[in-house]
Image 1 (cartoon, helix red, strand yellow):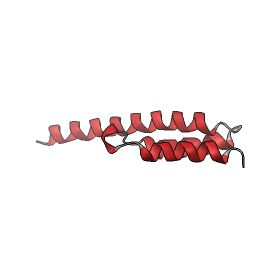
Image 2: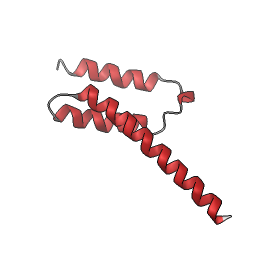
Image 3: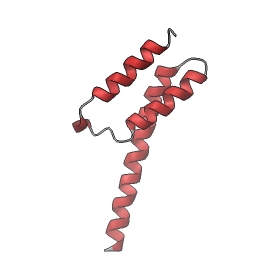
Length: 74
């Protein structure tokens, strides 16, 4: 139960971030990373941070690929 409070605080702080921050993919990655980190030797916060970075990278890469596909089709 002592690990619940930091995880809840992290999730709450992520949800409070304004939409203008362009954090596409971050929330989903943070949730997945936090859960994985929790089960991997109780490193939920580190997992959430890494998941946020990874999710943001993947979302940006996918957006770039979609933009290139739109350019090629026209």
